[in-house]
Image (tube, rainbow, N blue to C red; front, side, top):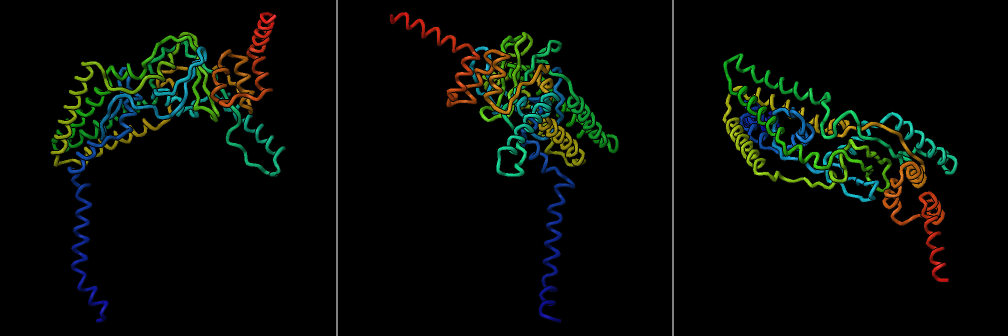
Length: 391
C-alpha cells in the first residue's frame, strides 16, 4: 500500500466523524427549529413596519402574523420637495405618504404622460443626431421637464384609502396561515401552533388598528384649496402638480410632519399592552418542541406577504390620496416648460424657477419671464414714478 493510501485510511474515521457532526449540526435547526424561532421573532424587519404603514388608517390593516416587530409611521423613503404654488413656500418632505407617491410615480402615470415623455425624448434624440459629430448618439434617458397636472378626486374622500388587490391578498394570507396552523391539531390534536397563530394575528391586526396611525399618516388639513407641486428637485425629469379644488389634503402640512412616537397617554398604554402580549407570545413560542415546522411555515408566509406588500408599487389611492388626471405640460427645455406652466397656472412656474435655476436666468430669458409674469410692466411703472419724483 502506498503512503497516500495509508494516510487516507488513517484519516477516514476523522472524516466520517466530522461529516456526521456537521450534518447533524446543520440539519437540527430545520428539523426541530425551536432555537430559530425566538431569533426570528425578535428580528426588526422593515417590511413589517412598512406594511403596517401602508394598510393602517382604514377599517382593518390586513398585516399577517410574521417574524419581526413594528413601531408607528416610518420616515419618508424618497427625498423630495413640496411647493405651495399659491404662497411659493417650499418644504423638504418628511411624510412617508408623499415619499411613496414619488417613489411609485412611474407605475401609475397616465398614458398621456408617457406619450408626452416619449415625444420629448425622441425630439431631444433627433437634436443630438443633427448637432452631434457622433453619427449614432445614444438615445437620452430623459429630456427637459415634464409636469403632470392632477386634481383631487371629487368622488372619493381624501385620507380614506382604497381597498386594492393587495388588501384582499393580505386577508387571504391570514386565512391561509390559520389553515396551516390547524393541520397539527387535525392530525395529532396539537393546539399550540393554532393558538400562537391566532394570537399573533390578533396582535398584528390590533397593532394596525391603533388610531395614532391615522393621525400620523394624514396629519394635515383637509379640503385644501391650495395647489401643490411635488418634485425631486433640480435635475428631475418629472414634477407633479396637484390643483386645489377644496377636496384634497394640504400637502404642505403633511410634508412638514416629522415621524414621532404616540403622544397620548392612551396610545402609550395601548402599545405597552401590545408589547407585553408580544413578549408573552415570544416566550411561549420559544418553548415549542413539536410541529415547529408548521409554525415556521406560518411565519414565513406572513413575512413573504409583508415583503411583497412593502415593496410593491402602489397607486396613490391606496395611500388615501385620490387624484384625477388633468393634463401634462412638458418641453425639452426646462425654461420653456416653466414658461408654459406659468402661462397656464399663475405662480406655479415661478415657485419652481428658483429651484431649477438657482443661479438666475440669462438676460434674454429674464426679459421673457418678466414679460410673461407682468413684472416688466411693473418695473416700467416704478421707473416712471421714480423719474417724476426726481423731477
